[in-house]
Length: 106
Image (cartoon, rainbow, N blue to C red):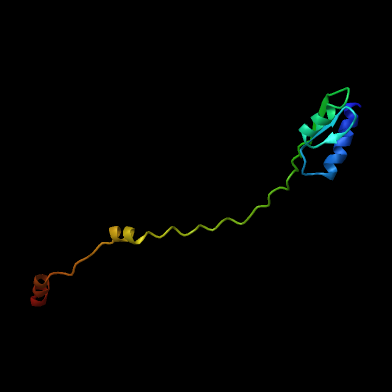
């Protein structure tokens, strides 16, 4: 059997079994999904050679041009954690009583 005949058979098998990736043929034209089964069958034939045909890789489909999208809104900055806030909090103290009494006297 010629390689073109094997390829034509393989196409039919792959179409019927899309999850399979390779098929192994013996010289009498029998196809096997498992290579070990093909080898075992080939041992019963005069010609023990196998022909393995792999499923062609799917061609990448051209994708449509990306449509311009609205600009992303800036996201809010992460809020500091409580510990971080404690570090940056500035404490102001009220004027001492002496300062206030001086102001009151003036």
